[in-house]
Image (cartoon, rainbow, N blue to C red; front, top):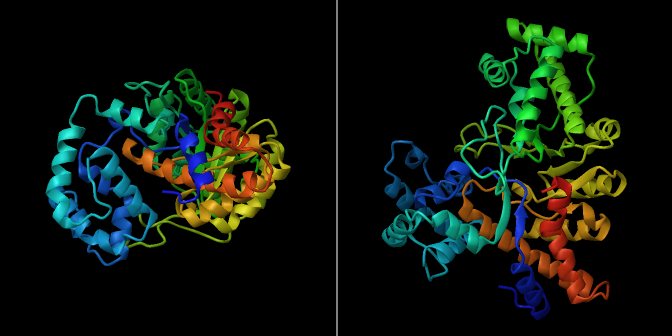
Length: 425
């Protein structure tokens, strides 16, 4: 907890405010965890424990879940210096009745039984949501998701488009697209029709954004539709070279931006992830950032679609100044959250301070959880609120830039109001 009185007072006020989580990987049909295995299965714990020396055999699908938890807990003393460890302790204390500030393998039976008893309650989801104080949670929906079976007012759909842009050479992806839309993407015109059908479906079901994660070398540009049609034909024949695949990716991406403009949806860009760098890593623990990424690769896009809002996430804190500069200049560039390897207190503090000092306050989406289970939203946002309170105290109230009440108002804006305005929820 914060030692400074002013920061603590601001944190207390910010904690009272409901907020919006504008990006998660939660399955709305199974939103909360059902066991402690769901919690410790989060990739941060498996990859950090593996990095500290834990063998991967306990992560096999047929490994007994309670024993996997016992194994992971026995390795957590190697990572108890990390922010992710503090998230886990906060979950145990907030939701499972745990009292200590350290956890060990000897706590397995207690934590397992508490999780089993509490998470099996029919009202568990509502309990977690109420304690977390989150109003809306944005999802990551595959393009062929039916969007049925959940409350889209609480769990806001978002069209995730990675497969469309980067995997159309896979016959299974093209089959999924044809099944979802009734349209075979055989040429640029048919692809446009299929994408239009997807957007109509998602918007009708309450979607408020389109999103994609992008590799370091991606530099989108508009592709002539005749050229794109030939590329799609080459894909269907299995004759596409790597350069043809890249060309198709650019064409599909540009077409998605056109539809975001037509349907008035923000286009979330998560830039810079290099997939499968560590081939021997655990599931979801293989990807890293790449310093070769620059937002200049997207300048043509920002200029071409001036009416489309682009909430941007970057993987590295070192790229934050570039993102801040683009949001400073381009009206349609929004700074969005603290993604993945930047989601560490020291990086958040530095990056958040720069954003608050340099970017119009209406263009800052403070944070998102990136969570896979509901229980993680509370500790992650609590970490951010503490850092936000400290930044507001040190760099705004104490400098005379604003009063305490104005600081709370600014905090509420970046925690909730901006997400509501930008995504129109």
